[in-house]
Image 1 (cartoon, rainbow, N blue to C red):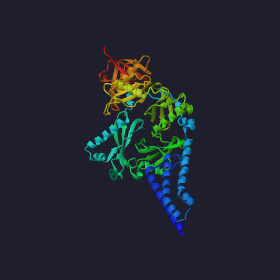
Image 2 (spheres, rainbow, N blue to C red):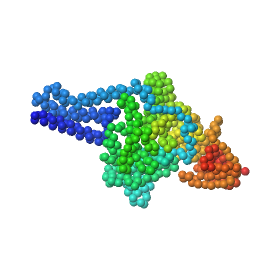
Image 3 (cartoon, rainbow, N blue to C red):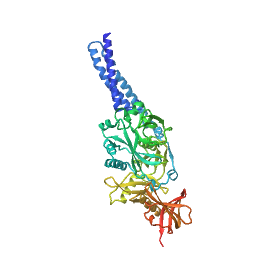
Image 4 (cartoon, rainbow, N blue to C red):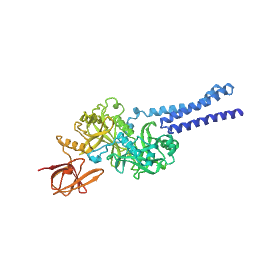
Amino acid sequence: MKINAKKLRQEGLALLITLAIGFIGFYIFLPPISLQSQQFYLFAGVLCLIWTALRLPAAIAAEKQGKMTRASLTLYALFPMLIAVFLTALFLLFTLASLTLFNASRYSALLAVEQGDFSQDIPQITYEQIPMLDTQSAQRLGDRKMGELAAANNEEQKSLVSQFEVSRDYIQINYKNRPTRVTQLEYAGFFKWLNNRKEGLPGYIMIDMVTQQTQLVRLEQGMKYSPSEYFGRNIYRYMRFRYPTMLLGQPSLEVDDDGTPYFVAPCLHKRIGMLGGADVKGAVFVNAVTGEHQYYSLEEAPTWADHICPADLLVQQYDYYGAYNDGFFNAYIGQRGVTRTTADYNYIAMNDDVYVYTGVTSVNSDQSNIGFLLVNQRTKEAKFYPVSGATEQSAQASAQGAVEDLGYRATFPILLNINNQPTYFMSLKDSSGLVKMYAMVNVANYQRVAVGGTVAECEKKYTKTMQADSGYVPQQTEEATGSVEEIRQATVNGYTWYYFKIIGYPQYFAMSVEQDTSLPLIDVGDSISVVYDSEIVDGVAKALDVQRNVP
């Protein structure tokens, strides 16, 4: 009886130590407790090895004392290993059942792709709407903002800079229908966290991607849940302990329409064979200030959220669609109709949502695109646009060739609709990473390229280049000629606009001085010719070109 009690104590101690190590490991590595997670199998296997190692000495001692046979010893000591073997077999079985060889059609169906119409689905855009800010430039602006605070005379602002740093994430969102990049502040080290954890992070950086206006948004109550927090308030740990069985993706900072910061993490589900076909089924939202959390399915997610579906996952799902749409073997033998995405992707802000953009090329050619893909990161709505033309890399090379003597490097392009023409837009940077010029390249003909020192100048040159192109006629434009009856001016989003009326025309014609620096020279009574967009909004038509007729 004493022996049994001792054995029971030893067994209980081994199990208790294993559980303690398991809790510490779970606290540090945060694996999901799910058979759909590869991390779980590794985590459980390691715990089984530890449990075995803790049980083995007592079993060996019992055998030496003749209290346990070799067979009993083996069964007793290796019982945890039997669990590990079972989990390993289960993992291998699920892996086999998840192979694309047996599930090609299911992999190709992960992303439902429709064909879109470029001119109808992608709104035309003008230079004052173009988001010209990539991640690297956003980081520079954020650092500059913190530098301004450090140089200020305000002691509170100086103290803020000494205690906090700016995260390098800069997530692109749509904030009140404006393309915006946001990122949170971070504690500048463990001891700075100790000094400030009670109040939390004081705010976040927000940058308008069009005007490049940068602001530090101060919060009435600090953000107490973020990636730079320690222990239980660390956003990864906070989410995992409240959703231990969910497969959570990377949390990203988002801001609702009231300016409240949230961390949003996609919730994944393996749709094929338990370990394959990862897909987004919803997301966990955590209020960064209060810690309030809520799970939403993909259909129920708030409309202000923009980054529910990870871009990498969406691109991978299209690659499955392009590769296995006609079966597994066709993807590698024959490759009839097999397509793939190009080497990188970017984002497009549209309809108060953020879309992943990437080019699509044939698997047999990497010199040109057969079209491009847009996927809504909130709804997962995907459309393919069959627009043949240059790859993004070819467009970058074309833009760099136009300023070859200056040695500028082009950023990865974004796709725009300029006069119903698919157009690549890029920033041109010098060796230190500063934006010096801008470039527009026609997708269908990448030799049609325009560069300018400002976005307005670049757009004007590009429009004239396309007008000079044989066979190209801008859609929905008209021309007006006559004497100027009235001139007004206003500042809109930092740009000076001129509104002038021509005798015989009921509408005003609007144009920014950034587009044409000669606008201030126009006087009442001058004779001018205007090419303008025929669409009239609130009595105003947007001028594309203005010529002053000098007698």
